[in-house]
Length: 478
Image (cartoon, rainbow, N blue to C red; front, side, top):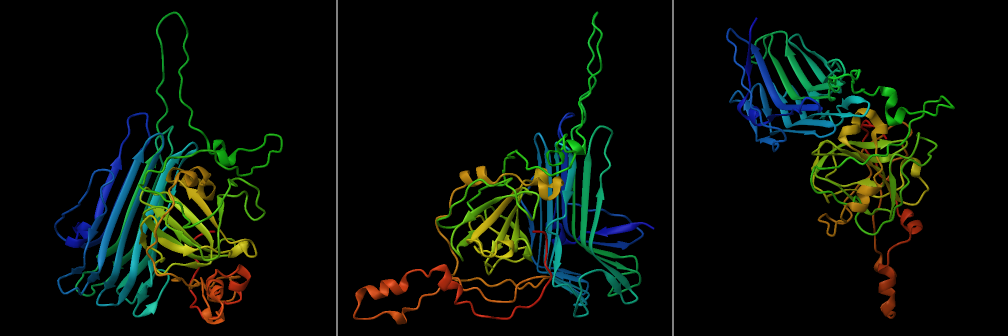
C-alpha cells in the first residue's frame, strides 16, 4: 500500500534539517528535526519536506489546526532547531518542541512535547543521547498517563520512542539516534482519519561518524615500504577507561581537554560575590571523582543560565538535591546542583537566555550541612558519548566568562520544587530573605540600619515555614 505524507502548513514551519559533511579524512555529522507529521494511506504518493543548510535559525510556527476545524489536531506553537559542527570531532544536535497539543477534540492532550537528541565523536568512537526529551502533563480521556497504551479499539499510543544505530563502515565508528516522542497509530477509522494513519509529534534524528582511516601510503624506488593505516582507538583507549597496568583495575579518570564552546554568549552561573577553586577530579566518596567545581556564596544567592538554551531534568535526587540541566544551542550541557529553590520560570523545556535567573544557591542533597554552594559541571557535546564521565574541568570556562551585572526578576521569587522522590526530605518552603523592622527604635537612629542588615544563616534557617508540595516524578541523573 502506498502512503500519502501530509505535512501540515504550520508543521512545515516547525521542520528543519542540517548536515555537515567533511572531507574524506574528517568526521561527519547531520541533524533533522520535525515538529508534527501526519501520514495516511492513499492511492497516490507525495512527499513534501522543508530543509535548511547546516545550522539554520530555529524554525518557529504559530498556532495550528488540522483540519480547519481542529477536529484531528491543534497546537499552540511548533519549534524545530538543529546544529552541526565538524572540526577535529563532529557534533550534532536536534530538537523539536510542540506546546498546547490536543488530538481528536481533547481525547489526547499535552501541555508540551519535546524531542531532543545529541551526538558526537571523540577519541574512542561515537555516541549520543536523547536527554531533554519528554512529554509534559500527558492525558488520555482526561486521565494522566506516563507511557504508551491502547486507545480503545481504534489505535495505539507510543510515548518516548527511541532508536539507536551504531553501524558504520569498516575503520570508522558511527552513531545515529532517533526520537519520536509521541506517536499515535490508528488501527481503525477515527475522527475522520482512516485506519493506517499515523500522527507523530516531536521527531528528531542525529548522526555522526568518525573520520575514516588514512589511506594506504606507498612509495616507489628501491626502498621497501609497508602500508600505513591510521589506527582507530578502541573503547579501552578512551581517557575514562585508562587503567593502571600495575593494578589492572578499571577506574574512570577525569578528562584533561577543553573543547571550545561556540554556542554564543556565556556568563558566570552565579550572580553576585562568590568564590571557587579548581577541584575537578578530586576524590569524592559517592562518585568516582569530582566532575565539576563548587562555587561558594550565600544561601538564596541567584543562579543564572550560563548560556542561551533549554532547561531539562529539573527535580531532586539524593546526591544533587534540587538540580537542573541546561542545554545550549550547540548541544553542550551544564549541570547545576544543590539548589535551595528553582526560579519561577524554571520548568522542563523552558527556553532561557544567558544571565536569566533559573534558581538559587543552597546545600540540598549530599551537600546538606555544608556551606551554601553551587556544584557546576560542563559536558561538551563532543564528549556526550562518554556519558557522565564526559565532563570536563569547568575552571577555565568560569575564569573566562563575564559576570552578570544586572538581574531582571522579582526579588524573592522561588519555591521548593514540586517534587517528591525516594528519600527526599520532608516538604518545606525556603525563605530567600526577610527584613523585620519592628525591632527598630525611633529613639536610636542606628537601630533601623541594624534591622535592615542581612540575616545570618542560622537566623535565616529558623524562619522556614512548612508548606505542602504536590508529588511528581524525579527526572534525570544527579
